[in-house]
Length: 321
Ligand code: XMP
Image (cartoon, rainbow, N blue to C red; front, side, top):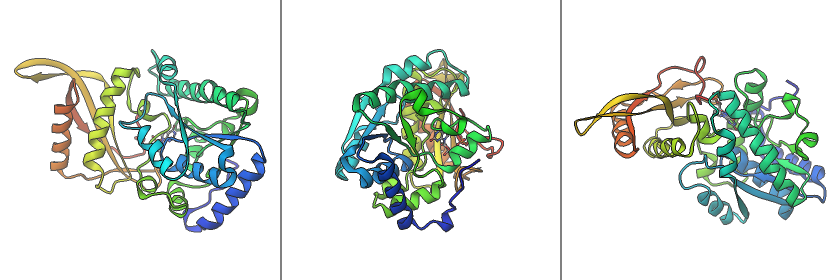
């Protein structure tokens, strides 16, 4: 791998910020760049670096792919509006769901999302805005996992030999590619991002599609979205690196009001980790697990079974897809 890691203990956030701001402005010059903001710490940092570098010449978009969590994108548009950054929402729900129709293999799902995002949606946004650059928040772990062949992270392009200028019509700039998540959080703090952004648990680029085993449909996303909201509410203060709900493909027999209910299964994962390279399941109190099970079976239609993952990464990975 040609990119050199900048270890968090060697990072001087202020210096890093001015260096990246300088590099973005000299690369873009007096042209236009675009970026996609999901509200995660990586894309939030890149949004701020880009706006410091080129101001209004950076157009920031929230891609509404239909796979995001409850209440977003409104929350992110408002939050960044409060920081003086205008975010335009692009409704691409139909495009993503059509690309995912019938796809069950995890790597094929990731590929469908990458193609829809970079070729269709951003290809169009770039053509319409006249931009020549896409700024994005690829980090060091994303590159490492993809190059090692663990799984293809949705945002890895050049390291896989993809010439983005030839294939999609724009060049990709990746200001935080040398940093691990802990380094990105430090930069976020230095940039003055609020704690709810810099301390936010990671959320994957393929969004809730990374948490649906089997076919991704609007109905199945609605199920995992509701379960995710409950898991995030209950585990918000548990101090873990990341926590998530997963919708399984298999259904199981349950019983509701004395009658058979052939229903869905939700798996919960909660990880202790520093940078997502390795992880162990958090030892959650049994009372918390019971509360999760009760709320999910009560509040998520069709769910009759809730499990907690007890395997570490490796051999597990943080997301199931
Ligand atoms: P895995 O599942 O590989 O995840 O153990 C490691 C970390 O990366 C996040 N993740 C992604 N982030 N694009 C991203 O930006 C992706 O395609 C992607 N897949 C996984 C995951 O949530 C975890 O923090």
